[in-house]
Each structure stands twice: as C-alpha cells, then as structure tokens.
Image 1 (spheres, rainbow, N blue to C red):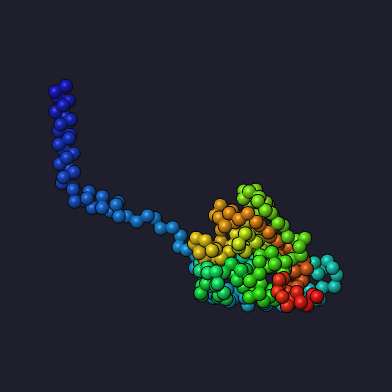
Image 2 (cartoon, rainbow, N blue to C red):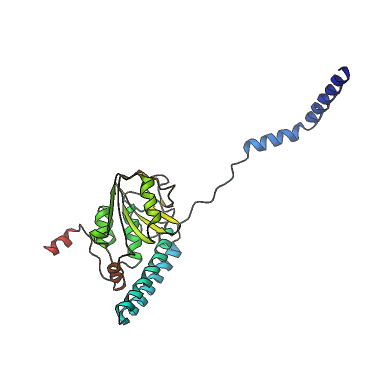
Amino acid sequence: MKRLFLVLLTLFVLVGAMGWANRERLGAWRDFVAIAPEPAGPPPPQPAPARYATLKEEVERWRKDLSAKHSKARTPAEKDQVLAESRRFLEAVLPEMMLCWLGTRWDFNGTSEVPGEGNIACGYFVSTVLRDAGFRVDRYKLARQPSQNILRSFLPREALSLKVGVPYESYASELDAAEPGIRIIGLDHHVAFVVTGPGGFRFIHSSGSEPWCVVDEGRADAEVLRRSNYRVEGSLTADKDLLRRWLAAERIAVKGDPRETAKRR
C-alpha cells in the first residue's frame, strides 16, 4: 500500500510539473478555444442584376420565336405542342428570374425595377417579375391590388384554389404533390410565388418578416405561408389561354382597375 501511494504521488508531481512548464502554451490554447469564431455558414445570396437583364432579353427572344412558331402551326395538335414548349420554357426561366432578386431589401412602399437596387414590396416583386417575363401588364396597377385580384387578372375564377383555416402541414403536403408549375399565391396580407415540382415546392417572395428581403424558402422555412389562415393560389403555366396571351403579347387587364371596370359597363 505504501509503495502504491508513493507511485501515485510521483505521478501527480510529474503531471503538475509538466503543466507548469507548458503553462504558456496551454494558456494560449485556452484563449484560442475561447475566442475561436463559430464556423461560418454559407454567405447570404446576392442580387444578380446583370443576369436578370440578360434573362429579360432571352425571354423576349424566345417569346417571339415561339409566337411565330405558334402562328405557323396548322393543326390544334401542333398548336398545343407549341403551348407545351412555351410552358416548359416559362417554368424554367421564371424561377431563375425570381432568384436574381434574392437579398433585395423589402419595404412596404418599395417599387424597385432592378435586383439589388432600392427596396421592393411583395406585390411589386410579383408584378415586376411577370412583366419582365413577357406578360404585358401594368406592374403599378397590378401590385396595388388585393392578391385575389392579382390572380384573377391572369386566371379565371375556376382555376383558383381557395383554402381557409387548413392546417399548414396538410396544405404543404398538397403543394408538394401538386403538378409542376409557377403559381401565384395570396395570403392574409401577402402575395408571393410558389414553384411546384418533383422535389416539393419553393416559396419565393419579398418578405415583410425576418430577414426583410427577397427569399427562397422550402416547406420547413416558409413561416409566412405557415402562419396565414387564408391561402388562394392558381397555376399560371397550366393555363393554355394565358400561354396564348403571353405568346401574342396581349395586354392583360388588371382586375379591380376602375378604368377596366368602366369599360365593361
């Protein structure tokens, strides 16, 4: 027992001596651990105004080419084939255009036309992207309308889906299972894009909540969509009549515009 005690005492003295001899190194390591920054996450997305300008030019070139192709088509089947090609093009280019705005700051009165410049409100984000994608619509009039009027400017009433009080998880599952398309969605006090596809949906909007900018959110992150009690949406790219109007560069009348109402009387 005495021998064991002496061995343990010797080890204790040696360890203490080593610690004292390396006190500066150990102290430096302690300080490093204390002040070492947390691992940096991915940098926030940056607006892409140059890419956006290029996409606007590409959209107009494609629209004109597809319009000429549609005019030359002789049978309903040939015309439908061009409409299907137009749909595929819009479903590819519209999300790219939306993503060029990521990081652009939100403001209730924001009316920017260029990603990254100034601020943009939710309605102006939707109306500006659609105008720049070749839909002939007055973005100022459209952006000031309630979300249902925005949708009704593009789609017939029967093409809309209205859900009130549906639990978020149930609603999100419906969107996950929806056919691919570019949708406008109106909420309690908000309007946004929803892009549906095989990988689920993306909720792309100019957010008046944290982080107060244009964001691209998935099912788990879409808090604004989650909190809303009222949800009305419709697929722009699934509507053949709207695709024909896009090809023909036909002016889209804004529902709720007093002058449009007067014309119908």
